[in-house]
Image (cartoon, rainbow, N blue to C red):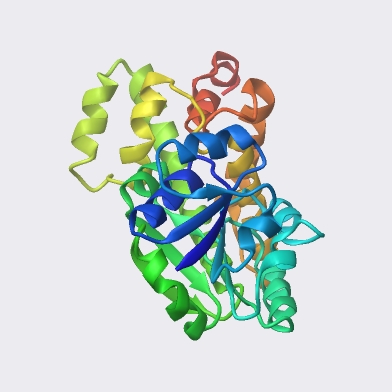
Length: 294
């Protein structure tokens, strides 16, 4: 299949690599040209100067950018994806945005004969690199069937959650649960540190018991080492949690843990910098001034 792939960040680059390795014809675009060149040094493919050029004659276009604003920036305009995509193509949005925007985009693209799937992913950078992502999809079953041979190259689980917007809504459930669990992991590990325990041993035994969580497994080690190199930056965490709070308000849901997560993410971003990994939320619990105020 001829595929356009837009966005070669920490998630997009390995995903596009799996697609190329599976034998599909891949044309990539990235705003920072050096990332496209780095990708081409590892995988077979072609780099295009614009999203429109990447999309020309493509049967599917995969977009892996941070948010709705970034998605719209590569979609619209004379150099955007829609200027190059032929009728019958499918656009797959692997970012994490708002369900309302996803529904509006799907409706607008349908008028042009182009399918659109909101298909956010979960599993993190490690799963992107190993090709074991889980993907929650909103849109038409026929459109998903059309791109499934490509998606299977980098996904362990692919599930159609409902009509347009359902993928993003499911991702927000993931954000709510993951954000709350991340707070609990940071609080627990900070307590272990302050109580004088061997925190690496604490994490090791907890991974074998009822306290196991993806957050403890994948972020606990970074929290202990205070290694905040950005894998999932605070800025993205704040964006995702903000989307969850807005969707929760629209649904009439009560989200006190998510509200607390938003406040802690804001606090740490302002104190330490929004570019740090979300593992840095442990700093909220380790700050001496905060402990003294209790």
